[in-house]
Length: 126
Image (tube, rainbow, N blue to C red):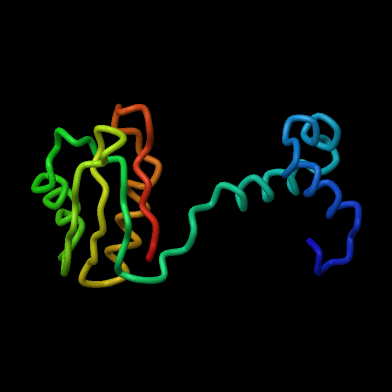
C-alpha cells in the first residue's frame, strides 16, 4: 500500500491494525477489499524457509513416539526431538523433514489445529 502512495489507504490499514472493529465499521463499505487483504496479511502464517520446524501443542498423552509417527505420515524425518512442556500438558520439540516440501505440508496441515487442549498447535520454520 505504501508503494502506491495512497495515503488514505495507508491510514485505513493503520487504523485496522490498531482497532479492526472500528476500522471495519468506518471503512468497511468503501475499503472492503483492502480490509480483507489486510486481514489475510495479518493472519498469514510465516513462510517455511527450511525443512526444520519447531512445534508445540500436540497433547502430552500422545507421547513422543505417536507424535513422530503422526509427522512421519507426511514424509520422511531426518531428525526429531520432543519433550513434555513444563507449563502445560503438551509436547514441544523440533522436527527436521527430509525436504522442505514435507515441512510445508506439515505447517499447512497442523499449524493452528486445535487438539482439544485449549490451545492450537504451533509450527514455525527455524
